[in-house]
Image (cartoon, rainbow, N blue to C red; front, top):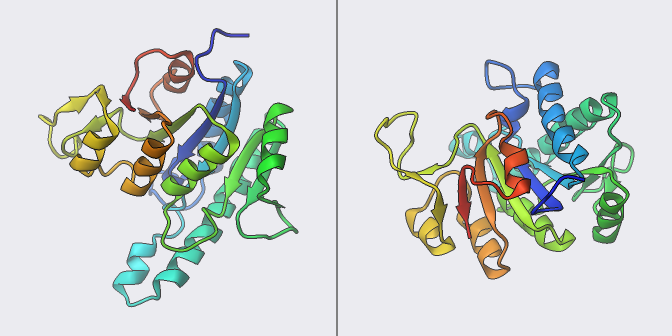
Length: 237
């Protein structure tokens, strides 16, 4: 087994990780690529739980701009995360990785209901556990769902894997001179109102002393470097 710093993690992925070039929908090739990255860290001996967003299918903000009820928009987003979860489960199982999807909103015909002790048991058996449906409640993001589930299952770190390699003081895609941070305290991250992870998730991690890594999902070895404790991305702690 590899020399690991973190042996149980929650990996938070945006729905865009599964999207094709357009940024929308589910691209089977991209799902396989993400599954390969998950399998690599699982093969190191890491217990992996995954929480997915749904921005590739539904953005509640657009519904709100048209007068949609917030709870309705959020419930639609939760259902969309389950679609992403099933897509990633399929890609992982085709690679020979035993995977379970658990959902905060019960839909027993396609997934197991989220039960904390069952999720822990499945992780201990070496399964990848994908936690869909957000928290099951409106007004909470999937970032907050990832932080909450990390506390519940006893994860040692929350990894927010995105399309940027770290936290910056401004959008680095629009501002080439944006300042990059290797490390931030929870309070610094909250005061900066960083856009890469929401404040409720950061506060929950702060209250429970759970470190957060912000890394580029597509950077080679980024996830492996986190679980080994090597410097990568931004550490919020």
